[in-house]
Length: 436
Image (cartoon, rainbow, N blue to C red; front, side, top):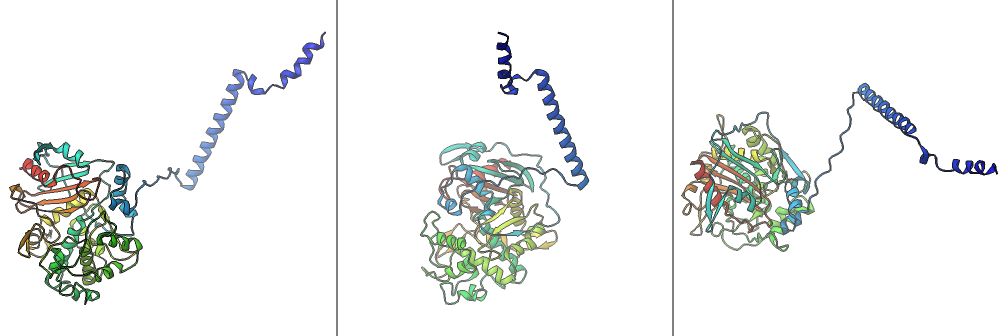
């Protein structure tokens, strides 16, 4: 009879030990684990102190971005689109536009912007509407060289570099003026083939630099961004191929639709030709020339990057610069100040006035200067004498010398063109009036 309890003893011992741990046992285990962890941490800290090394931070993953074809097709979802626009230096090889050793100050205005209310296409809007409906990701407004308004949206901040798209056309054309002042280009009426003999015998025979800057070469071109068969998209495919000199070769094969100076036709390929011409004239990369003569001299705060046709190749003269919001604003101030930096005149006298004025082409007035757009002053008189750089998806630098105002807009609109809810020129005018 006494064997029964003794027979159950071994069965209890076969049950897993963890099911019968006492509170005291748990406390002992916890104390051992914690003590071991502390000892390891102290030992690791001592080793790091001895070697001078610091704990490693987790590697930050790069933002997900789309492809350049998706960008031009307008087929990116909003979040990916924004991330792509602030990381365009990952889409193509780039060259750095170096900043200098000093920074041009942009102090805060004691009279900040307020009361921006206006009517556009029969509807009333305000500043909040403009930023929301036009998907503005960055807005900088300078009055008398001071910051009247600065705002970043969609995950951007003051260190973000954002794409220029065709805003850089105006920067490229400005470098032509610099090269004339420096003596590298003799005259705006020089033939293009004098600097780019590879274009001799092509449709660019007889075309002047002035014709290029006015988009009036007479060379046949289709700029449609969303059409894979357009000349603009063929140029993009050549850029994707990364073959040096392929875009200029392509431009040399284009036909002619009219005599130079008789018809205006917007042409991104034309600005690439201008970039090639600057490179040939100054005998150095265009990004380097921009750095030497404007970016470093005026006092940009950050380096910029510029798309290349191929690794270590030619800059794309019509798109692909990426810079901070404030540095785009500083470029606007440089131009509004007629290229005067301290005591040095970087641009020829009268260049800015001529570059930012409407032209007569083929007997018709065109609101386009030397790769600068000219707003309609007949509907908004405050635009008199003003001009602006403009890029697809809503990028712009508006300059109003009379009011001493510069406005920089970053946007992430759904499609390359035609999707702005509020007219930008109406907004610019409202800002100028509010600051008056």
